[in-house]
Length: 438
Image (tube, rainbow, N blue to C red; front, side, top):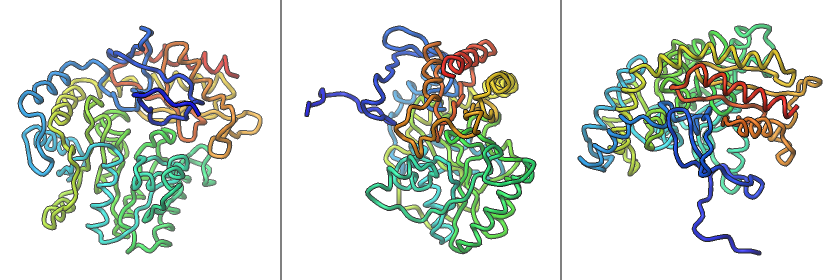
């Protein structure tokens, strides 16, 4: 057995030798990145759905530099001006009375913090999440994830507990049989109510869900679904937690994705776009009632780098950038991106469905003869997947796209700083990928 070279980085989400060469990026500007060989790509996935302000927002860099000079680190058990300022600004933008922030480091840890708080406040052990969801890959967050490719790996050697699952309110490939999106939404909400009753309402602390699905497919809920979910949670005294790790900070057309549904959750988890990924930062926005209980009882757990001052400075500067036209730009471009992607649906029989919201969209593929995916990686993990080839060809044309869970789709999640020409370039590259593959 040959010994590996010493000192090499092990990439995340890496399939070993089957992945071949891993793209190495050395610089970025706006919506574009450049590899070590000097080739430029349009980054239509914002790396991991997170570089919302683009790759060269100098005010964010300047704010981080200034903070590092003033004081580079303050314990998460203490306060500091950048941290307090960002907490206040997040509360100003959040819906309802979500006025208090418990900072964290990553989306996984934010979701773990939220369920820890929910279980303590509710004195109940269970959290309900959707099948075909992704909430992180640490042990507790992996248990929350409905994506089997994540959960199975996490649980391979140690069981996780305290999480139940309910079916997603998808309109395409729906597990429900309603004739309209509204009927599907009602059936999906009724199903959630059944699960809560079946588990025992007193044992359920919270429902944790994305307002618009992220890597699991960018699908929004049918009309009326979230209003009914809010009613159900209120009826059975269950907290509603909105996972905004991907959906937040302009990605879906507003500061937080749940605001596009007109519903007020009890908690919001956030990460990624809060700093435009210039520094790791995450957290939980909690209602005044929940925050008061946490403050009164205390919280004996913490994370060393939660609310890191340099990251909070990046967050404050990123929020300035979002307020200074970036969210408006994303909102204005969303209908054009949708229209161009729907052209692919009309042109190619292999495109089964296009869905999304704001600047978060999925182009889903299926065999037009059967309506089934060409390859379902959940049951055929080693089969050649033509959807991978579509993305590879698009990359050859200079555009990077994301993969979904399951990988039967291409995810579009560009920085908010793109323009119409960028949309055309990206969709034309995706079109070329489909033509070359099928």
